[in-house]
Image (tube, chains in turn brown, blue):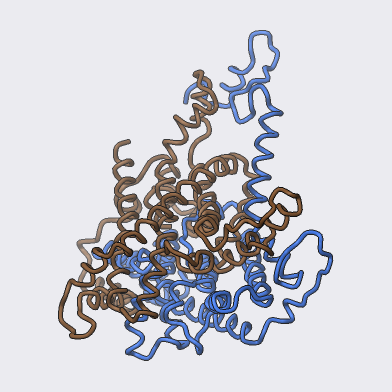
Length: 331
Length: 300
């Protein structure tokens, strides 16, 4: 939803909810055509703050936001602030210290794990977006296919990663897995393939989940690109592929960046899949944090590492957002 | 609009001098080699669909074949895996449903007035508050889970029903606020003003005019938040315990401690049915076309 707003278009159930009633209202009619251009800054239909309002009026409206503010502060802001605070406090003595950050960043094991995690996330994100692009393009151009296939494909999106992990075990397990049994029966393999419980199995599970997300998002983004633009390029002598690469692809680039950032941060902080499907080093960084938290009783070190990973994940999302706004304003 | 852009223009351009309709059109139909292209596209679609639906299908198949493995040749279909599901699993599922339900109710109850106040009051801090409400959604679930654990242990809230509801509310509130904000923006202020002109107070107008109009969209929003809460994993992993085990955590601990169990595969299949039911419901009530392009992040 956030990404959708940043892109200046909305698709999916967010669009339904926004249109739900107001389709007939004047305000919605004044909205720009979806996908026509990137809308930077506040939403066009948002009026500037009313300066002439009396303070009593403002107080009346503010009173309604108080419970939400309190709950948001209590359930998210305060815990996160404490996490940040405790990561700067020595676990034994209670003194302010930076040593947990220094320890984490100086530890070759942690840094190697972090780099492995980033490499895994970047690789999987790239492959899933590349796999999803043609599918999303086809689905965006065929309404009937889209209405049938998108719900079917999206089912794993509403499943816990744990269930995806079970599916991968049933598919890939060395002796009982479906793929190995079929391949060995067919005589293609003489020994089972030990893909699971190592990084390829994990990459496959993440790639599966990532492709599903990428198809759903990119289909919506492609739907906002006018097919006539490509037709125009074809009339002027470009091939279909060239028209796709030079006309449609640049237009959906913001959507690709948004989807990639979403998939990247999911993988970097994913915990279920790494533990279920990849039990040997190099670990993913979430496994390391969990071990520090529970097995090694290095709680404050774990907090510092969590902060580092969070900064990384949010940094990527913010950088993507920056890129999007710059990309949008240039046009 | 240019000649090539309009529908008539296309027909003019596509009909050459001879009057014979040319097969090569400018629109969505393909130029030469229509069949080859269609077949290639069709094959690609079927392959992708098979690849994407297969692993989930495997869970369902295995759950009806004893639950340990799936095969195409074995004919011994049975529901033994489902019968083996211990009461503990059903309790976990029920726990997930209850916590998800209460978190959804609390989140929406708080989010709707807040969104109304911000939108109708045109408050100066609207942008700031909006960002603040989105924070739990922007921070990775893992981080929020660990942060909640750090705070809940001294408060005695970890490993409890209340703690789980609080954690889910944190996330549900930011989703609910976004939905409610979008919903209220879609309702013309004039309707409310009309009610106020005729003597209703603003709160009465909110309750009798706005809420009924919001109801359909709100139901969909509630369904989305509920199912997201139902499958949440990383947020709840840290604060769960023997007295508070959501179903995703239960399945996870079992595969880590004891390996693949038939009852766990059966329970996974149940979750698959829930997801299918969810999409069927959305597809039939909202329309399937709204499912493409949703950028909701996943919580599982």
